[in-house]
Amino acid sequence: MSTSQLRALRGATTAVANTSAAISEAVAELIDALVERNNLEGGQILSVTFSVTADLDAIFPAAIARRREGWDGVALLDCQQMAVAGDLPRCIRLLAHAWLEQQQPVRHAYLRDAARLRPDLAD
Image (cartoon, rainbow, N blue to C red; front, side):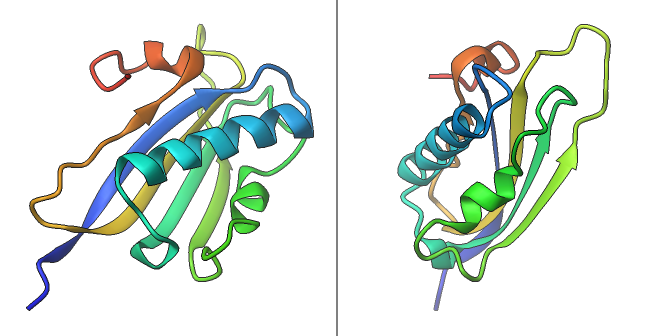
Protein backbone atom coordinates (compact mmCIF):
# COMPACT_ATOMS: atom_id res chain seq x y z
CA MET A 1 0.00 0.00 0.00
CA SER A 2 1.39 3.37 -1.07
CA THR A 3 1.76 6.10 1.51
CA SER A 4 2.07 8.85 -1.11
CA GLN A 5 -0.05 11.94 -0.82
CA LEU A 6 -0.47 15.02 -2.96
CA ARG A 7 1.58 17.86 -1.49
CA ALA A 8 2.02 21.53 -2.40
CA LEU A 9 5.50 22.94 -2.89
CA ARG A 10 6.24 26.66 -3.03
CA GLY A 11 9.17 28.57 -4.39
CA ALA A 12 10.32 31.89 -5.74
CA THR A 13 13.34 33.52 -7.27
CA THR A 14 14.31 36.65 -9.14
CA ALA A 15 15.74 37.21 -12.60
CA VAL A 16 18.62 39.64 -13.05
CA ALA A 17 16.98 41.12 -16.17
CA ASN A 18 13.92 40.85 -18.41
CA THR A 19 15.64 38.67 -21.00
CA SER A 20 14.97 35.13 -22.14
CA ALA A 21 18.42 34.08 -20.92
CA ALA A 22 18.06 35.63 -17.46
CA ILE A 23 14.55 34.29 -16.92
CA SER A 24 15.53 30.84 -18.23
CA GLU A 25 18.49 30.71 -15.85
CA ALA A 26 16.37 31.73 -12.85
CA VAL A 27 13.54 29.30 -13.64
CA ALA A 28 15.93 26.38 -14.22
CA GLU A 29 17.74 27.13 -10.95
CA LEU A 30 14.42 27.30 -9.06
CA ILE A 31 13.12 24.04 -10.53
CA ASP A 32 16.46 22.31 -9.91
CA ALA A 33 16.40 23.41 -6.27
CA LEU A 34 12.84 22.20 -5.74
CA VAL A 35 13.52 18.86 -7.43
CA GLU A 36 16.76 18.27 -5.52
CA ARG A 37 15.41 19.32 -2.11
CA ASN A 38 12.40 17.02 -2.45
CA ASN A 39 14.04 14.15 -4.40
CA LEU A 40 11.46 14.50 -7.16
CA GLU A 41 11.16 12.80 -10.51
CA GLY A 42 8.95 14.06 -13.34
CA GLY A 43 6.33 11.37 -12.74
CA GLN A 44 5.75 12.61 -9.19
CA ILE A 45 4.99 16.17 -10.28
CA LEU A 46 1.37 16.73 -11.21
CA SER A 47 1.33 20.45 -11.98
CA VAL A 48 3.26 23.69 -11.68
CA THR A 49 1.77 27.17 -11.79
CA PHE A 50 4.22 30.01 -12.34
CA SER A 51 3.44 33.64 -11.64
CA VAL A 52 5.71 36.51 -12.64
CA THR A 53 5.72 40.19 -11.86
CA ALA A 54 4.61 42.49 -14.70
CA ASP A 55 8.20 43.53 -15.42
CA LEU A 56 9.01 40.03 -16.78
CA ASP A 57 7.63 39.33 -20.22
CA ALA A 58 10.53 38.03 -22.33
CA ILE A 59 9.61 34.33 -22.07
CA PHE A 60 7.05 32.09 -20.39
CA PRO A 61 8.46 30.15 -17.39
CA ALA A 62 6.29 27.16 -18.40
CA ALA A 63 8.08 27.07 -21.77
CA ILE A 64 11.34 26.61 -19.89
CA ALA A 65 9.91 23.90 -17.63
CA ARG A 66 8.36 22.12 -20.62
CA ARG A 67 11.88 21.40 -21.95
CA ARG A 68 12.82 19.34 -18.90
CA GLU A 69 13.30 15.65 -19.42
CA GLY A 70 10.53 13.59 -17.82
CA TRP A 71 8.13 16.54 -17.54
CA ASP A 72 5.96 15.57 -20.54
CA GLY A 73 2.98 14.80 -18.29
CA VAL A 74 3.31 17.82 -15.98
CA ALA A 75 0.53 20.39 -16.35
CA LEU A 76 2.15 23.82 -16.61
CA LEU A 77 0.54 27.25 -16.37
CA ASP A 78 1.78 30.84 -16.41
CA CYS A 79 0.03 33.87 -14.96
CA GLN A 80 0.88 37.39 -13.95
CA GLN A 81 1.38 38.13 -10.28
CA MET A 82 -0.99 40.63 -8.73
CA ALA A 83 0.58 44.10 -8.84
CA VAL A 84 1.20 45.43 -5.35
CA ALA A 85 3.10 48.62 -4.60
CA GLY A 86 6.59 47.84 -3.37
CA ASP A 87 6.57 44.22 -4.60
CA LEU A 88 9.86 42.53 -5.30
CA PRO A 89 10.90 43.32 -8.91
CA ARG A 90 11.56 40.64 -11.56
CA CYS A 91 10.11 37.95 -9.30
CA ILE A 92 9.11 34.44 -10.42
CA ARG A 93 6.96 32.41 -8.05
CA LEU A 94 5.74 28.85 -8.36
CA LEU A 95 3.25 26.50 -6.81
CA ALA A 96 3.86 22.83 -7.60
CA HIS A 97 1.74 19.82 -6.72
CA ALA A 98 3.63 16.56 -6.35
CA TRP A 99 3.14 13.08 -4.97
CA LEU A 100 5.43 12.63 -1.96
CA GLU A 101 5.70 9.99 0.68
CA GLN A 102 3.51 10.99 3.60
CA GLN A 103 6.39 11.16 6.09
CA GLN A 104 8.69 13.10 3.73
CA PRO A 105 9.02 16.73 4.80
CA VAL A 106 8.27 19.33 2.14
CA ARG A 107 11.21 21.59 1.34
CA HIS A 108 10.32 24.84 -0.38
CA ALA A 109 12.83 26.92 -2.38
CA TYR A 110 13.20 30.68 -2.02
CA LEU A 111 16.28 31.80 -3.91
CA ARG A 112 18.17 34.97 -4.75
CA ASP A 113 16.34 38.16 -3.71
CA ALA A 114 13.13 36.17 -3.24
CA ALA A 115 14.60 34.78 -0.01
CA ARG A 116 13.31 38.05 1.52
CA LEU A 117 9.73 36.92 0.84
CA ARG A 118 10.01 33.93 3.15
CA PRO A 119 13.20 34.12 5.22
CA ASP A 120 11.83 31.28 7.36
CA LEU A 121 11.95 28.98 4.30
CA ALA A 122 15.09 30.26 2.58
CA ASP A 123 18.37 28.39 2.79
